[in-house]
Image 1 (spheres, one colour):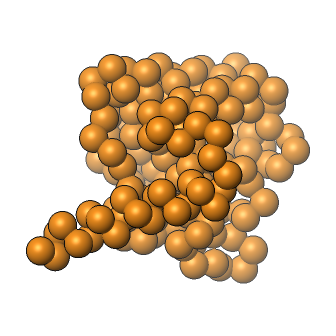
Image 2 (cartoon, rainbow, N blue to C red; image 1 turned 180 degrees about the horizontal axis):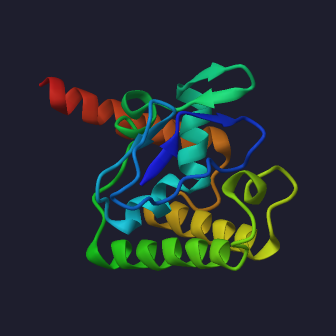
Length: 161
């Protein structure tokens, strides 16, 4: 899985994707080796995007994604196998929606206001699923962050004990 090191702040989602084993990733992106596809669903959620907007640095008008600051620090609950299966299906729905627009690259698909409707719907459904699994349905952004940081700091205290 590939995550760009910099992504425009104007995007609702960071355009992440999958690569084959022959692709060489430079320092302009990060790679997660052989992740379970449910991870794609979590990282492509508005909840993760909110975390990124809050904790990451900026480069020009873009977010400077970091594995240490954004990925490794993102609070996650213990997912049940049922949760993982739902997340896997949601990830596949996003990827299938992208495939319907294979004439466009990720930049075109994720440009603000130009996202194809079926891809946007797949993302919105994914957002709802992730928030439900986290137990955050209907929360404001402030409440979401409060809960994410509570998980984060609880985990930090546990690790430092």
